[in-house]
Length: 135
Image: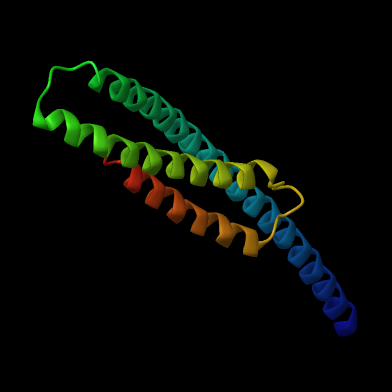
C-alpha cells in the first residue's frame, strides 16, 4: 500500500514538473515576443526620425550656399557633412539591429540565451537612442 502511494506521488510530481516546464516555456516565449516587438517598434520610430533628420540636414546644406556671405556660413558648410556622416552611421547601425530582430524567430529560438541576448540588444537600442538625441 505504501509503495502504491509512493508511486502515485512520484507520477504526480513528474506530471507537475512537465506542466511547470511547459508554462515556463510559454512564459519565456511571451517575454521574447513582447521584447522583440517593443524593440522593433522603438527602432522603427528612431529610424524614421533619423531618415527625416538626414533629409532636413541635407536640404539645409543646400540652402546654406544661398545664404548671404558671413563667417558662420562657411563654418556651417564645413560642419554639415560630418553631421550627415554621423546620422548615416546611426542609420546603418539601426538597420543592422532591425535586420537581426526581423530575422529572429521567437517560436523556434525559445531559449534563455536568446532572451538574454535580446535584453542586451535593448541596451544597445538605448545607446543608439542616446547617440541620436543630440539631433
